[in-house]
Image 1 (cartoon, rainbow, N blue to C red):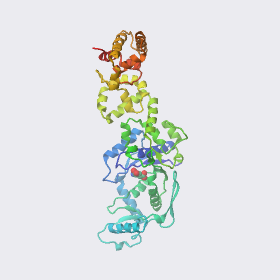
Image 2: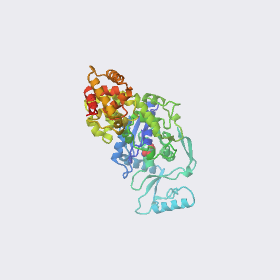
Image 3: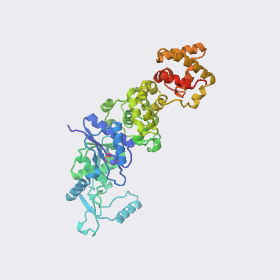
Image 4: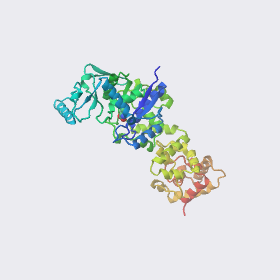
Length: 473
Ligand code: GLU
């Protein structure tokens, strides 16, 4: 049996955006599913636009998403000599030729095509010309001598059988006059040399697939299986824009999405298994198949992503969520201050309060917000809504509560619960009349985890001190 080898081949001219992340995920899943490998190739041949920051962002983003790749990362630019060698090999075999057409000539061809209402094509003027006619001092490009009759067929695993008449494909450039390879040529040589068996990428590369197929055929190399997956559109069906969520993966991380949630959300953009919404990593690998990838564009929906993330947060282990907080602190505003406030004692408190905090959070940012009462220091900043609850009457209740709570022999949620209820009864008021100002005093907010859990997490000393801060002077 042939071992499957897939690859993710991003151009490091920008961050790892959501579409790229999904392409990587599909390649990763297919490789894992088949017991094969996923390789990573950084397509850094555009020297002007490729940056090391973008490379780092791509590597970080993949690692954060848990999409590990096999073997060594390949950098395309480093293989330029091999690309040139293969182009010369085609030249020697008569499957490619030197073309000396000047930029002006190419402009004329383009203008003529425009005038005649056909797509611009190189007219093949150097295809059969003798090199001795070459103008002196001009460096040629190397063009593929593409077949002109018949058709090129791409048997795509997602798009089906795509047939392109060869007369619509011109003799593409393999090697520029400065000796650098074109994208089209480099991709073919690299995929071949890396032993790629399956090319899984966005459908925007489908026309390239036909041209690349011609290069494979000229070289006598087997053409890898191809799967061109639909693009991701915004919720309104238009091309994905920043407003829609075309952000870098690192931005999703800073917005507080868990990698496992983002992965689950992404896998269902273009692929599904019935109505099943949530997949563990193992289930995803088990169920994934290219034949179940649809052809229509997927729609990106932030609200849906948030709901999926909330599900993952509610079901995550508490220490996993504490780790997720640690993970994003370096990436968010104010993160370093929070990291400094997270002493070992407070970490233990956050962990203890996590069951109540995670019930109310859809993102890691909301977890941090929910843990705010633990990280806050006295005297607490009280928000406007909470301040409105601290009427003179309520402050009177707090004073009575303080006395009763201070007398408790043990400090547990159950004990404080009983004490607050007893006090409400003694004063002939509803529990809420005490619980609300108590929450305001302990957290500075009107929402928080259960108030008796808050009391237990904060501990006797800190709780009593926060209550005392709000008592009548
Ligand atoms: N480097 C190309 C891109 O980022 C992908 C090339 C390929 O997958 O063949 O769009």
